[in-house]
Image: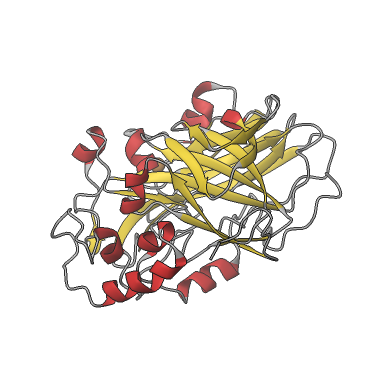
Length: 386
Ligand SMILES: [Cu+2]
């Protein structure tokens, strides 16, 4: 793993999570029209979707029945103006593979931050986050490491928070040890006994609400020899959100506890909000490269039938287990709520590949991501015929 290629955007670390550029870049960008409409359509259709949208007249939230020229999803992605802070996590922002062969003590600093941020192009939501992003920072340790976790709950929080690491063996995964009221700070440590990709999340009751509002992330416990080198790694998590207002509404939306109990979310998305992995942070790679996606489901309730349109997973570390041999040649992988998987794709053909949950109604509620692959056409593998 010492010769693992350096990834251009692999600049975050587990302690701070984000880069200054991330916030600056995203703040200058608004969601454009027709994200979900574009994702599944052909490129030729894209212009039409946008044009239809821009001439659309329907008010968001007024109906849940998409019309022929102005579907709810198009309307929901319509407003280009940025109206608040942003929680989207850049999928290319994660720590590089570890190059050490000895265990050590790793400090992980988490701050729980509640903030109003973009939910899509026209609505905002008061998210609860780890370190200001959804998902929280990607934590990367090695098997045998001692992980010292410090959790601080920001002064201006309204709620208590904590963290439960699924990679931890011990009561609550650390939840009781880290429960902090606003302004408090607590620490615990655990030994990373088992390699694999694990979810962490807030576990303050009602746990489902804390997770839905954004409090989840992934921790990778690398095996002793690390994972095989790849050209690029990405960090993607799926979540759903329960708002009182219907999908596509405008303004500051409010959480809906009853809908959460009934498991009737209004929104599904990747990395924090609608459009986060399409307009804001499309993943980029080149023909000839191998990419790896660390994919987790925060949920809290819905499993994901994770699929990349136009690609086949060459290798899948099922359930995030890196001590079992990966499955090969898989179309769709089922990822449980509170679970994770690692997929790898060798890229042979240029174009736009769309990450989805193949429960495809969720695309219409905001869930999609783009993997844009550049390079030489490869007509032996794929070609349009006259
Ligand atoms: Cu919480």
